[in-house]
Length: 92
Image 1 (cartoon, rainbow, N blue to C red):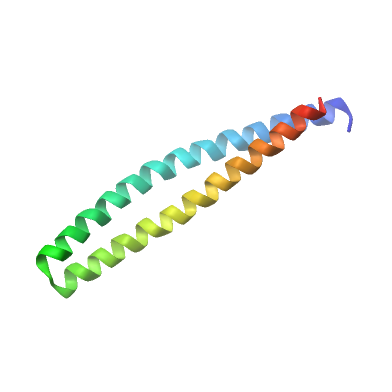
Image 2 (image 1 turned 30 degrees about the vertical axis):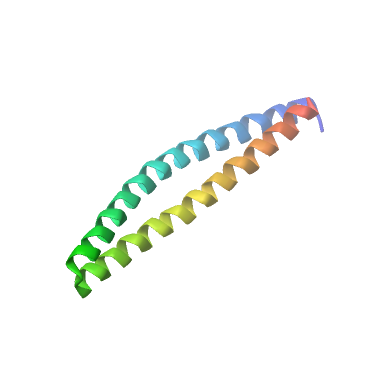
C-alpha cells in the first residue's frame, strides 16, 4: 500500500477512534447514573415490598443492563480501532 494511502487511512481511523472514545466516555457516565438509579430502586423495592416498586426496579435494571451492553459494544469498537491503528502504524 502506498505511503500516502496509509497516512490517509491513519487519519481516518484516528478520527473514528477519537469519536468512539468520546462516545465511550459518555456511555460510562450514563451507565454510572443508571446503575445508581437501579440500586436506589432496588432498595426502595426491598423496603416497600409493593408490586409497583418491584416493577420500577426491574425497569431501572433493564435500562442499566441495556446501557451496559451498549457500553461493551463501544469498548469493543475502541479495541478494534486501536488494533487497526497499530496495524497501519506498522505499515509505515
